[in-house]
Image 1 (cartoon, rainbow, N blue to C red):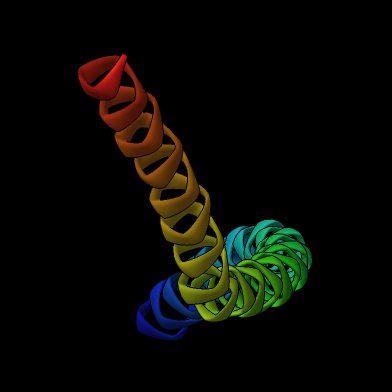
Image 2 (cartoon, rainbow, N blue to C red):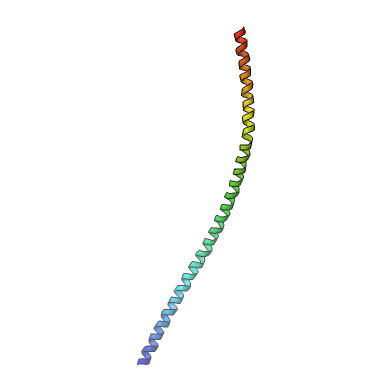
Amino acid sequence: MDVLKKINNIETKIQLLVDKLRSLKQENKVLVDENIELKANVSQQKELINDLKTKLIKTQRALELRKEDEPKESQKLRKQMDRYIAEIDRIVDWLNNA
C-alpha cells in the first residue's frame, strides 16, 4: 500500500505541475502579447515625440528670424513716425505764421 500511496502522490504532484505549466504558458502568452502592444505604443510615442521636436525646432527658428526682423521693423516704424512728426511740426509752424 505504501508504494501505491507514493505513486498516487507523485501522480497528483505531476498533475499539479502540468496544470501549473499550462497556467504559466497562458500567462506568458498574455504577457508576450501585452509586451508587443506596449512596444508598438512606445514606438508610436517616439515618432510623435520626434515630430513634436521637429515642429518645436522649426517654431524656434521662425521666432528667432522674427526677432531678427523686429529691429528692422522698429526702425522702419520710427522713421515713418519721425516723418509724421516733422510734417506735423511744419503744419503747426505754418498755422502759427499764418
